[in-house]
Length: 451
Ligand code: MG
Image 1 (cartoon, rainbow, N blue to C red):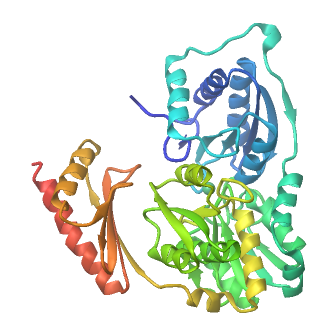
Image 2: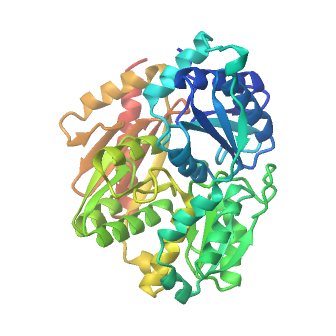
């Protein structure tokens, strides 16, 4: 069956595959599944937000659902609001995709992204077109609310403000013309930081740069951090669920660094506890968690899976290497403004520069590569590889992660492209590359056997 939901909601090009009819019918499918109640809708800063929001809201109301319009707000603020106030949530966003894209993401009543089983139920209703159509008296209505006040209070309450106010850190924030501009600059000023903003005005054409927080897109931020002598630089993606950092020297910090750093801080502060991360994350996370008496649990790739596993296990912290960090005491979803506030608190507490703090973390080299593989061969290839590596130590939580005494190799099919990805990690660049080369040959050999 054709799938509607991808790894992060439904995405597409506006007025092509992501259009009014789809949005309306998806609203009707969600409303039919929910069978009454209240749904909050928030959006990022894209041009097509009003159009798609109105369509989803109409669909929902036609099935008898009441809708709360939250306007343009960070995704984590919608999730925080949903948990406290409504039965479900919808976020209109395409996160880091180019401006012509938009998407629809559904949030469960506890504020966490939906897992596949409920998505599949909603998809079934969407494709069957068997919507709940009540009488005219039962059609839902729409009200407005502002989720930011309570969300901001929650973030500020989670941070030691005395400490951050004393530290008076200088911070440059690049909001990518997305909704992060509504929260992070305000929050950090409240924490006593001197804040300089880049691309903080909401603009769905993304005039500053593309909304994916890559090193290439963040050249202005890098320069600004160095030029003004800032203590750190912060960047968000378009809907502000991911945060990426630069140290005071203007060095780009890969997401695995901040994930490791924060895992260390959380386990240290809690005197242990469980941390959850996907199998693709750097071993540095496991190293620090174990060092401070915590337990690390690996999951398949995808933030909803990480969040759900955290709830099941009562974990204290979790996250992905793309800058999406989840603080259990706050809420079970990726939260960029919260991450920014927590990193500021950490630097204030350490009374050292961010580069010095990062330098203490375990260091690994990662090698990434891809092999073309038609979608219809993906499953067969995985079976073949498991056979080929049956003598080795591996885990198959997601793809095939082959474990070596001095590193690992993760071979997994891409969820979005006709491709297999090979990630290898080791102590040195040379060894990581060597592992990558060796397994690339194996994957190609297995592929050839199909012809
Ligand atoms: Mg995002």
